[in-house]
Length: 240
Image 1 (cartoon, helix red, strand yellow):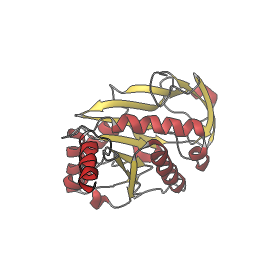
Image 2 (tube, rainbow, N blue to C red; image 1 turned 30 degrees about the vertical axis):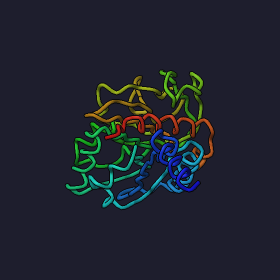
Image 3 (tube, rainbow, N blue to C red; image 1 turned 45 degrees about the vertical axis):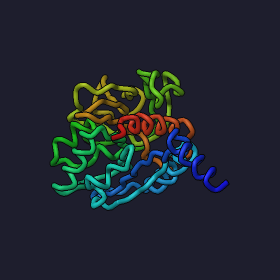
Image 4 (spheres, helix red, strand yellow; image 1 turned 60 degrees about the vertical axis):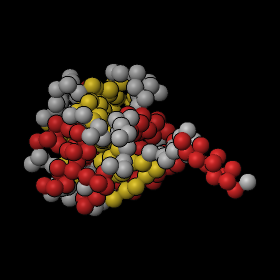
């Protein structure tokens, strides 16, 4: 009976029934402004993982960015990271991870980081420029054929801290834009992207500018938006 049980387990492993769950790394180091909502965001991502079949690690320690360590992750989530995050070796490890088909997701202040590293700007898609006071605005969901937007209305009204961007990269697949006529303080004009994705140097990158407020991380519509972005990023990691 014992031998039969062992054989059954071997067969189940071989067929993938006991396959290891994919795992993501949430990185939330802040060398600049620290968003109080990071704590809420961490809790929300752990809950999304538990409910949707993926494991979650989290750290503020950039020493986690080594080639060997990053290999275990299906995606890396930059949760409102700010300022200079990495030394040269850690930058190289992140680049190698992306080149090895790694997935990246940036949330809100992930665009407010690594201003001295042009590769980071190209990877995340844009850099933070400024923001007005928190207020309600209308978002235009320009692509509803993505897992992060399929559930959203074409016009989505919500309150958040609305980033203006600089050095917006060409070739981004824009999912959501801001209607600057619906609020005060927009600086990007008629074309103001706020959520996008793109394939980049072998990997895939998803970014959303939403997520400043604590309330975001208990909003079912925003959480589904996050989950869609995480799933897009996780899909980039190929088995070796």
